[in-house]
Length: 531
Image 1 (tube, helix red, strand yellow):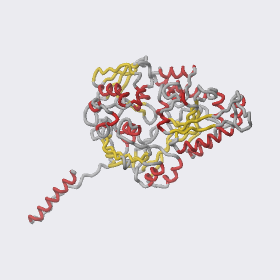
Image 2: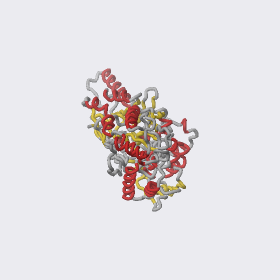
Image 3: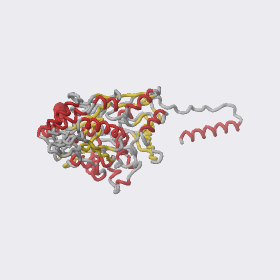
Image 4: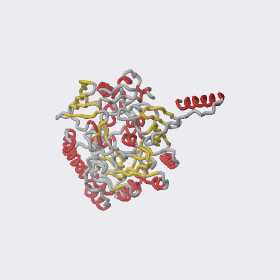
């Protein structure tokens, strides 16, 4: 609007000069130039769909964690903690008192300061505003705010892993949210006021478009991209076509290997790879149920899988044979354990030693008491690669005499699963899933939280308990290594294949950072620049 107004003023001056008969021409200032270090617009593409610009919309919640709303700390690209709203923190020797010192210059996008009162308000109301996150605050005993920049959180029990668990807990502005009665209908610009580098601008559901603009007054400095668009596509094929046509600059998530050849044909596009901070695909056993309660049975199943074939089929060289210790190589705290091995004869011998043999000649083994056995693996129906992986797994297990069926569920059903209700679960696991609980997978492996493995065994419980009490980093790393060796020895879960992160990007920009899941992270949006 200002440029249009300037143009009209210049036009009026020119016409006035012409009609007055003056032969001299006025000096017209050239239009302002775009800063060569800035980017006018960046577009990310995604398959994940945003239904509502509300903090209870799962996908929008993930987006505004990057763009608009910040936590006390965040997990950085290496998997280590970084400062965010808190510039420092201290924890008591009993790990029950956490003291945070906030940055004193942090502000909300409407200009009001971020204070300890905002943190207290958020944590005390998190379960009301976002019921699916009540787990994160249920162990809070009390919260103290001795001054505007200091927060003291007193816990009911020790928690050395608090900040990793709280990576998804975003601080909300009290002055905006304190009057909200119906959180489910609170959306749009006001609901997205945050302390982050971008401000929500527009959501067009029919067009599948979200727009964020740079926060001019962002307290850490104005971000380098003026406008970021987030475009949504029906499937990965249409998303990649948009990338190839130049309609987007990068996918908001990493991709499968089989799109790589077409991308590399485009001179303006590049590929970055990184070791995965999550588990690509694994089988999680409910170790409370027979025969999965037998280490021998789990070991037999591990030997039945041809990991080289799975790696070729699902990673095309962008992967590696997974470790028996389950924790992926790209995660902070990884230690090397023996790789998983394919050995059909060893698998059969182990099953024989358990007394699981084929009694009726149908090619499938019965239980030691003679009853029929058919294992059930629960998996997500919305991921195409999982259906292909299921076919391969069924083939491998059938080859050693194990009858297997799959139960397919949608994402909403899957998210509500607990290990107690299932026999086996087939799933990828993000770096955050591994970081839950006391860390190193304890939120999935033990009987708490998701409890996919329902493991309740003396040695494991001792390691998990010690980890939850470990306040210093060296102790945590040592215990994390011990847990990985425990997983390798006992196999409460088996990684089916391990794929590197494959991230396409537009080469006309530099500063892309592949985090633990993709380039859509704080470092990328703050470090991008023209190449």
